[in-house]
Length: 107
Length: 118
Image (cartoon, rainbow over all chains, first blue to last red; front, side, top):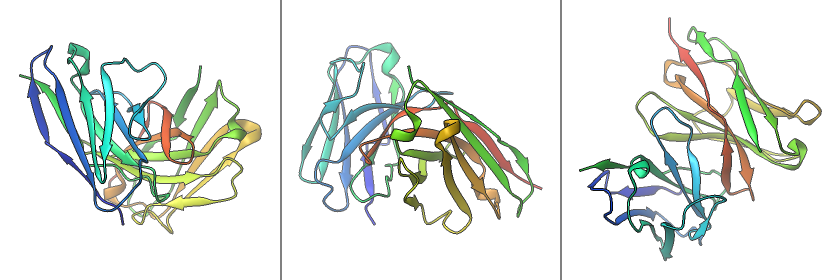
């Protein structure tokens, strides 16, 4: 069973600052990792897939990277609309599990 | 553009059954696999089940295996989730989502709420 562990649980930043969100897989998932954003009362939205490919319509300030079992979502300069919960999800073994989420909140 | 609209949620007693539906527009429904994902109140996302584009195979989370069944009617552009033997811990918002490459979920509906309570 592949487990994804996200850190930190909560990230407090001011608009304009850079954000770094982490996701670690319990075993190799190659580069089959996605990142999703969910705002209160809304459905999730796919941001990044295959670790570093932006989904359709996603702004360039969002980027993803990978090193072995460690994955990073970077927001270069946080905009007010970016405060939300972010989830990683693995697409490696056909069970599509999510991490527990990181809440990006306004400092 | 792709739109997914869920329906069928409601309040049901423990041990009861419910069938959720998800109608898709703006996509070739028969050309895509589909997922159900749920989110308990105040909690994170839990992937529930996936069906291949032609209905030839299905995958389930352990928490619902043997109780839930996913199926799709491509002629009606509709995805279903038959939920039996419901438990209080099944209480959640249920989202349907379109599959991308049998790895990701690239379009989501707005969800339908299921409450299991006596």
